Amino acid sequence: MLPGQPKWRRRKDARPGEIVAAALEVFAEKGFAAARLDDIAARAGVSKGALYLYFETKQDLFEAVVRDAISPNIAAVEAAAQAMDLPFAQVSRTLLVRAADMMSTSAIGPVAKMVIAESRNFPDLARVWHDAVVIRVLAVITGLIERAQARGEIRPGDPRFHALALIGPLLMGVLWREVLVPVGAEPLDLTALARQHIETALTGLLIEGAR
Image 1 (cartoon, rainbow, N blue to C red):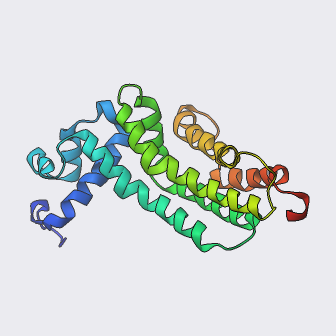
Image 2 (image 1 turned 180 degrees about the vertical axis):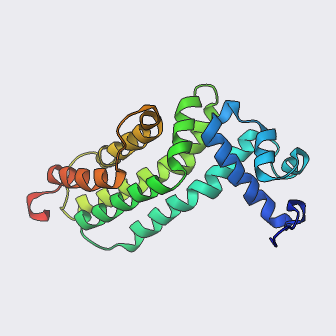
Image 3 (image 1 turned 60 degrees about the vertical axis):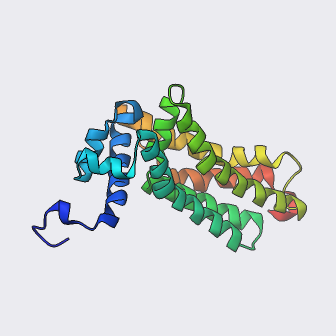
């Protein structure tokens, strides 16, 4: 947009993206229940009527936030996992650190916090988050573990439980950052946590010859 050009002259095609970006900011700041469509419209620089041209409800906006702001990050992890034909130890080190970097710089943390806090009153939030984020991440890690077990790299055991054990500390780290750091807890380096945790986890997971 040229300097001084009125916001209402922006390309119409850009508006849904701007509205979604504004919704993400408002959801992160206020939560789902307290967020108002008026606030989101004002943040996006559009009228409430213009917002309704693209999104009828806050639920529609939340689904768009997950689809446009979160899902591309998950797709990048899926693509990276599929492209790596390496021993499990190398793949897991790379992916866990990449996931930690992503959680540190993307909207995943604030949105996850909101879903956890408000899922009792808005269960559809949890459903959307589960279907678009949780099961996809879990499927990537579980698939890697299943293949590593078939190659004799990883000890027997439920691969889904192994996957949950791998990603659990990162989820705790995200909640620490989003819930406790704002009230005075010591900040947490998610990437450093990932690097230390994967070495500890691999000690228990890997069969002796695969270390």
